[in-house]
Length: 470
Image: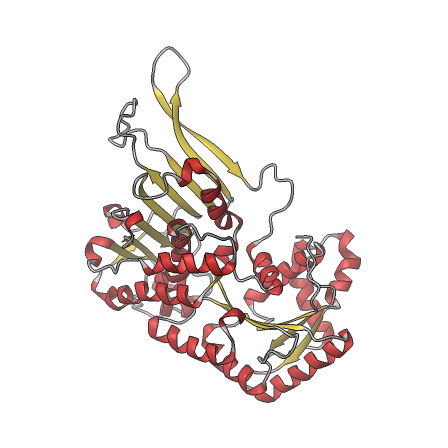
């Protein structure tokens, strides 16, 4: 995190007063500033509908940092707050974009050099279209001379294959693919990044990484919380759109992709997209899917009575890929469950001639688990003899934790998102091909979702009872 980017940079945060900005972006920028990882010439311009003066903007940023500021940081904090300015305006109000453009030009004059421009859309997806059109008409999106222009877009990108394509068409009219940074912050988590390094740097695992050595893969994104004030959004979106099309499938791509050949953005993103394109359409939902809704969901503020939005799903997916033929990928996510965790568990096949006692019919099965949250780490499950005179075996674990004994603090996901976008590294951002491959798999499921029973489950449980059938 000590590498300093030399190119002057201006970051415009659309929706700086919103929840995403206050909870994630502003604290991430503060940590990058403290680490000396921001360009020497760097400014942040907030854009939102509220009327704020300079003092109010500083107060907003300071409040967002909360406990992340220690008393020893007083001088650094003052310098950090000096980086911010603000432009009030509606997202479809063209005159305010022109005013924003004048502010950007003035800052470049102060720098004495053209500056790269990053436009971060920290707004609800409903505002994307208006923002795209205003950026085009105002001319702010144009890259000129030495100036690079990039746009950062949060998920969900569209509601299905058709709307994702329509958004992409508008975005492509403004930006080239090399300028578009579609954010899936799970890709920026330390453990997820490490999947590729772990796989391709350790022969003992990579040699088994196919149908020859793996029985199944289970990807879980489980939460104990509910919808946390997002009733209107969630009642219209559901879990499969919210996290299935993006987070869960990106984790699948990281596990299933072939060796990219080179460790750079172009090769890695192409390999992820290739893996997603091999997803076999789910044609028998009754045998391959479970959908559920926690009891009391329709009573949450903002949720329409009788809402059929799922808060839980579980899918049994397969890939049309020789390397993975017959290997099920179990994809599971839900809210108000008994456990909060995001993890990927690889279940290896039993050795044909293993000298071990049978454990509940499964033999001595080895597992490899990538723990993404709440604590990031990697665990290998193996079998060893119990101490004593018998030959009885017991399960043991080798565990590596990022938090314990780490020599340096691992950056949070949004720190990495911003750091890479400033440097122009697209490795951890979803490509157009990845987004469309994901929607091609998910959209037919959404179209047929109504044919599958919406099963109730008790808050704090493991989910619908039929989940064990997959």
